[in-house]
Length: 617
Image (cartoon, rainbow, N blue to C red; front, side):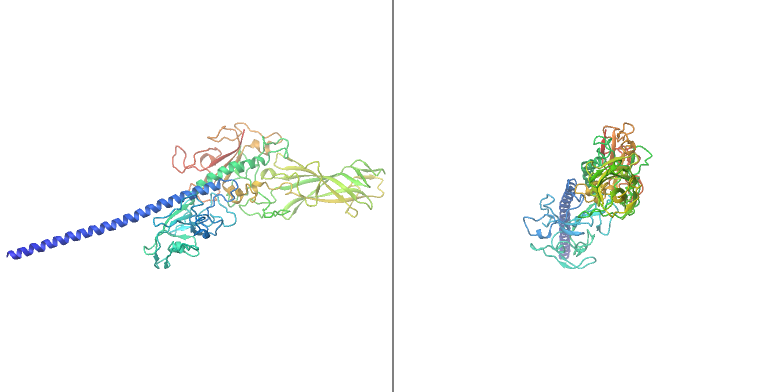
C-alpha cells in the first residue's frame, strides 16, 4: 500500500513538473513571439521616421525650386536618381535631368540636401513620381487643380488626397514567391551596373515597365516594402505659397507696365497706369473666354485675369506669327483685338525730281494737288484683321512717283480688355516706316486704341490707275496721271500679345504654361480702367478697393487673388465662384486671412486665398 501511494505521489510530481515545463515553454515561445512582433514594430517605426524625413525634404525642395526666378516648371517633383549614378560614389543620389513618367528609381538624396537615408536593413530609399508631376524633357503644366495619378492599394483619391509620389523602404532581399499580384523573383543586390527595381520592390510595386498602380501590403512570403504616399494635399500648400511669391515679384511688375507709359496716352504713366478690364467669371476650364469686359456693373470691376491672346508661340518665332486656334475654355482668340477702322493720307511725293506736298503747284504748270484722305477697308486675312489701304498718288506720265510719304491712322477694338503692348517700331510686311515721327497710340475710354504712323513707298509707272479726282488733281493735267499704292497693315505687329500672355516668355512664361491663370481672380478699381480716360486714372476711398488686413486700408487700385486648391470638397473646374474663393473674397468684400485648414468659426477657417496687391495709392 505504501509503495502504491509513493508511486501515485511520484506520478503527480511528474505531471506537475510537466505542467511547469509546458508553462515555461509557452511563456518563452510567447515572449519570443512578442519580441519578434516588437522588433517588427520597431523596424517599421524606424522606417516610418526615415520615410517621413524624406517626404518633408521633398516638399521643401519643390517649394524652394518653385519660388526661384527662372524656374520654368514650378511645382515639378525631381526625377529619381540617374541610373548611371548607382555605383558612382561621387554622384550617387543626384537627380536625373529628366524622366519618363511614371518613374521608379532611387530617392535623389544628395539633390534633396539629405544624408544617404537608409531603411532598417541598410538599403537606400526608393521613389516613384506620378505622371504629370515631373520633368520629362518638355515643360510641365502644374497648378492648384492638378491631381496626382498614382493609385495605392487600388485607391486613386479624389483631389487633395490624390497621390503625386511614393517613397518606399525596400527592406532586405527576399525570394518572392508567386502569389496573386506577385511574380516570382529571386532578389539580388548587385553593387554595380544599372539597378533593377525588381531586386528591391515586390509585387505590384515591381511591375516592369512601371505603371501607376502600387501597393502597401502583400503576402508575407512575397512582400516587405514599406510605402509612404506624398499627396497633392501634402505638397500643394507649399507650391501655392511659392507661386504667390513669384506672382508678387514677377507678374505684378509686368501687369503694372502693360499700360503705364506716355506711349499709350499722355495721361498714363508709371505713377498712374491703366489696368485692363477683368474677364467675367465663368467655368475656368470649360466656358471662360478670358476676354476683358467693360460692362462691370459694380466698383471694383472683378473677374478672371484677361489673358486672351492671339498668337501661338513657336520656336523659333514665326514672322508673321502663327495664330492660335480658339477652343472652349481657352484664352485664345485672334479676332478679339481687331481693327475696326482706318484712314490713309498722302503727306508728300517726289514728282519730276521735286518733292511736293498737298496744296502745292506741281511742276510749275498750274496743276493743283489737294489733300485726299481715303478710308481703309478692314479685311480678315488668315484669321486676323488687317487694314487694306489705297494711297492715290500724282505722277508724271512715264516716270515713277518716288518717296511717297503717307500716314495711316487706325483704331483697334478691345485693346484695353486684353494684355497687349504697343510696338513703336514694328516690322510690317510691305511697309517701310518713315521716322521721325515715331508711331504713336492713344487709349480711348471704350478700351479701343488709336494709332498713327507714317510710311514710305513708291508708285512706279504702270501702277493701277486712279481718277484725277481721287488724287485731288485739278487744272492743267496734261502729262499727269493718278496712281494707286496699296498698303496693307496687319494688327499684330503694332499690338502684339504682352509677355504675360506668352507661354514662351523666358521670364513670365511659366505663368501661362502652367495655367495658373485658371485659379487667379482679378479686381481693379473702375477709376483705373479705360473708363476714366481722358482724365488721369485715379481712385479715392470708397471708390478704391478695400482688403481687410491690408494697409493702407481702402486705397488699393488693383489686386490679384490666387485661389488655391479646392478646400470645400467641390469638383473643379466649376462655374461657382465660391468653389474657388473663401468668405468675403467671393462677394467682393475682400479679405486677407492666415492660410489654414483648421476649423474655427471665430477665425473663419478653412482659408487658402492668397491676396497679392498690384497697386495702391
